[in-house]
Every structure is written in C-alpha cells, then in structure tokens.
Length: 261
Picture 1 (tube, helix red, strand yellow):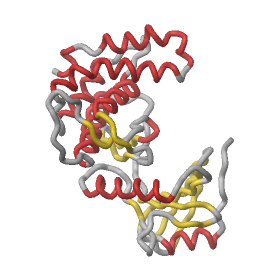
Picture 2: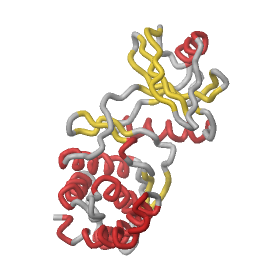
Picture 3: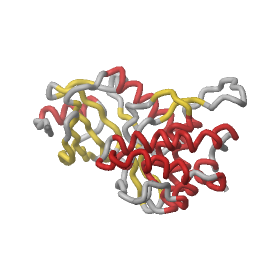
Picture 4: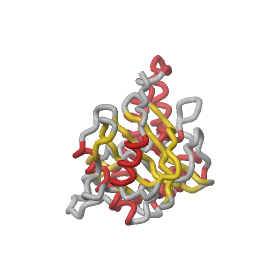
C-alpha cells in the first residue's frame, strides 16, 4: 500500500536548517511508495532529494550508505553527494520520520538501454567495484570478492544521453564475488524476448567494465554459470516462471567465449 507523508512548512524549514540547504525556494513531493516518501527541495544552494523513511530503515544502515556514497563520489562515480546534518550525522527526525538528504542528480531511467549506454553502465559498475575494493591477497584459482552495489537495476540507474548520470540506492551494498553482480547486470539489462542474452549489449557491458577492471580467467570461466543462476532467479519471480528452465538455459548458452572479444 502506497504511503505519502506530508511535510509542514516547519518540517521543511527544519530539514533545510539541519542540512545547511539555505533558504528554500520550493518543496515538491515527487514520489511515494511502500517504504519511503521523497521530496525535491530547491534552494539558492541547489536542488536536493529528501527521503522520509516510513519503516524498515535504521540510522546505522543509512550512515553506512552515506560512507559508501562519499567514497564513490570522491572517486568520480556518478552517485548522489550525501548531505550530513550540522552534527555530522547521516539522518535525523522530522515529521516523526527518519530523514536523509542527498544532492539531486539529473537524468532518468530507461526501459531498454542502447549499446553505448550499456558500455557506460559496465564502466561505472567496474568503477564501483574498484573504488570499494580492499587490498587483499588472493589465490589465482579463487574468484575475486569485494563490495558490490547489490541492485544495479533499471530503477537505480539514471542516464543523460548515453552516459550514466546517476547511481542510487546503496543500502543493499554487501560483500560477494564480483562476477555475481556482473551476471545480475547482464540478466537485468540484456535479456532478449527469447530468454537468451542480447550479445551486442552484453559485449558492450563487458567491454565497458574491462576498461576499468580486467576480468580474470577464472571469472570468465565462471560467468556463464552465474548467468544461469541469475536468470533462474529472474524468471522465478515473474510471469515466465513456467518456462524458467529453458529460459535460464538459453541465457547460459548465450554466454560464449567470444563474448569477451
């Protein structure tokens, strides 16, 4: 059930004061959902996204997301710049809700990404992986692990033209093998109507990724299996679940060795 929390003028002023946003010019409700209410605040200092969390959000989780965004933004990843409070905190309370504020990002999500958009998506994904990577020794026979975004789906990626202009929603960041996120992105962004992988778009994502981070031999070998698992999860949650097996196998078979050329 959708929810929307109305902000009073006093609430809006308190948010602007707490995050040093300056004098407000306008406050616009731009989205609602089951778990959060979102506003666009405009002031002389710029434009900001204000999110009121209706339930299920903890201050610690949001603080960790802010730390992630701070690191990524400082390294050129197109993600929102967090706006901390005057006390240095990621969140505070207004209208009896937990509130977080970030800079507004231009752009919009797309239903079907083009080749150049896919290539830039791959590049940005690799930027995220390398920026959040920890230096650690690893055997060549072991799949590289690290922090991944966890939800690089269409709703969380904005484009301006062919370039990624924004990546949002870092609350699902977690540690995993990096190839798992690559597989999820391939499935989410390149599945065709027959259940296979659109090879041109998949090649573009992998090509963009490897301009930043080169896949290891073991990752290339493992990728088809991860695509199979990701496709199975994808189809299990949709109307195509009756054709899950053949569709997942079609995606697996699409991942040929020349995909990396």
